[in-house]
Image (tube, chains in turn yellow, brown):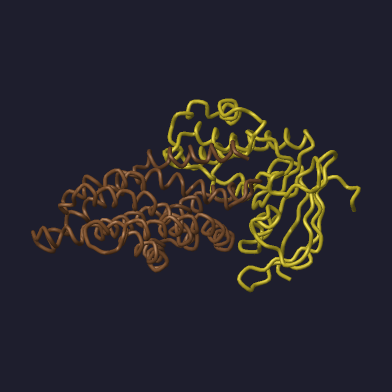
Length: 205
Length: 223
């Protein structure tokens, strides 16, 4: 088990307000691959992602991320990007300022804000307050924030929400580049993306 | 670890400035509260002078609470609280920095405005100076205590009233010593320095304790 490079989840059990979402869940995501978590609404896809991110407590089990020279001691949250349902943008700040803050907050060594915006095709929106942008544009800025700091693990909760077809292609491109660098991704999805993924299907036990 | 906190401080100030929910609204509310008191109690200058410091303090408490409900709720709603929680930076320091930024945009303007508004209560120079000194030392404690309530109500839609209900009892000791130091020059036998030093102690105590309480509450409520 220890020799596998990537994310290892073993015997994970999570409860939310007394209701057991899943018990004894084990899977591995090798470096350079993506895992799609699928299942009906309310089955616990988001909770699984939040548990891996360390935002929800786990009742039992282990979550570990092991990568080459990476030290295992650093909390997983610092080596992962988490993109939830909300985009984590301040409505009153411009797109540029939002990305600038996220880069500085994460002590990011990735793309500077302008380049990250260009990567999602939103250079023209840099000086717009994030609150004035459309839902899809906000989502793309949130995707741009993934690029401002290098993190090996991307935890994306329905990343394609509100994205139009070209943007979805763009998302797939970003993911492919991330995986090609040896990164890994765990995504909660309803519709499959045009990307080779392993599928983990959550169901009622 | 310092650089991200500086960035956070800058963002908090920028958000408070742009949304317009920060200092100016708090000061206007402060002014509104102080203005209605002479109308309510009548133009009795002796009475106003006697209750002036207390009114200024109560108004400062309410104005501080007014802006605090969005302290963590806004971050909870837009998802940026998750980013803050996943960082290597301890959540306790995040709480301190957010409180510091909040105090700079709402507490500090109150302190600066207090001597001007104090004139409506016919306070003399010494009384004005002691009100300003006590507010300067005491309002950070109010912000930090309010942060505990703000953290507990971060995930509630309409947590503002609940925040006030939680925070006001906690603020009673601060209010007692703040008002008794502020009113020392105008009312009576109590010296200024004794309650003032207790007030300083209370502020330092909340600075030491409240960030831990607020961070623990945030971890619990933002699940």
